[in-house]
Amino acid sequence: MSLEFFGSPLTDRLFACSPFTAAARRANVQGAWATWGENALPEFFSSIAVETAAIRNAAMLEDKSPLAKIHIHGPDAERFINRLIPRDATQIAINHAYYTPWCDDLGKVIVEGMLLRLSEIDFIVTAGLMNRWLSRQRRRLEVVIEDVTDCFGILALQGPDALSILQEATGQDWSHLKFSRGRRTAFSSVPVHVWRTGFTGVKGYELWVPPEAGNDVWEALVSTPSGASIEPCGHASQDIVRVEAGMVLPAIDYARAGPDVVKAHSYGLVDDAYHASPYELNLGRFVDFNKGDFVGRNALLTESQAGGIGRRIWAMRVDWRQLVSSYVERDEMPIVNGKIRRIPPMKLLSGGDVTGFATSIGWSSNLKEIIGFAHLPAHLDPLEAVSLRWDESEHPIDVPVSLSRLPFVKPSRK
Image (tube, rainbow, N blue to C red):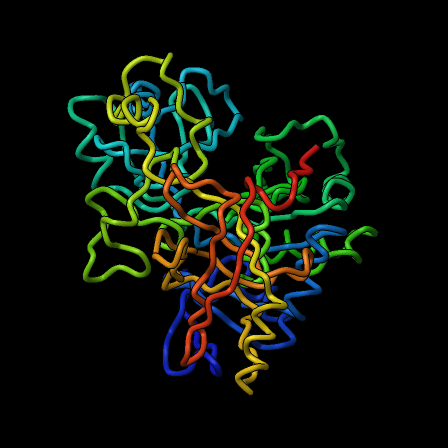
């Protein structure tokens, strides 16, 4: 990847460019940039409200290229992966994607993300890097582990209009491609692997593109007749929509387990107190005890039994009117961030005592609410009175919240 200077507001630093940076720069009229690791991505193109509305009602494009990609291949690849994940890897067909957690021996999540099967002996994991942990698990198996993050660009095309745009750009019928399936195609002569996956809870696709062809694929999509409905989507906008869809992020909503995290040099949540099992992240449905042995099985089996789960994650809605009133009573200007607050977590209280914490908190213009994830003891009744200690100002405010099951928005992937 090339390096390029972006200027204000990313001054005095160099950032890696993705295959779609040139196209994104032309479309980024606000000039707002954010960072994802060593990469610079648009924070938003027009406004967060416009972009999040487009995801739900029209179509969006978002650059997902910095997402870590690990290629696991070799004669023992399936056996290797099946021992490491709580889902049954032997049931993954070619061109099929599984969403799965990866756990350590204590049943704590190292990462969670997509597992794509390219052939009988080829898989790609899209999640946080875990090369050190994977290498320790390899033992004598015939398997190769490679970081191929920079070998592909990923462009997310999501929203109700995504199907028509894709069909017009390729001249092919995509209506029969099921969710979590993939298919190879070409944009003119550019080979592209299209996956019916996404991080938004709406129907959409992720296009895996050769790095040198990113600009051509972007232009092919926006130039279609239906492409007029496309809103390029920034990092901040997608962040809000993934919370609406109930999707968690490592280091933001839980601390990663495993040897690949160096606490002194890591961003976000790193303390062991924020480690979580799949059950504590609403991912228990991806644990299959019938598949046989896998890393973390004994710990997860114990936890799944009555009284074993330590805490649960809930959809949290903040009484923002009460929050604003509290600011007014203090003659202070209300402070409500239009973006998701990633770190640090806010405290949750019940009966006057701190009982949990809240993550990924922000304003959803689609729902017209302040939303986030509440992490609370498993025994706590969600109907109990719970308050959030809003600490965005000098003097924190305790504001009521309501709890419900995730997600906030029912998936509409069909």
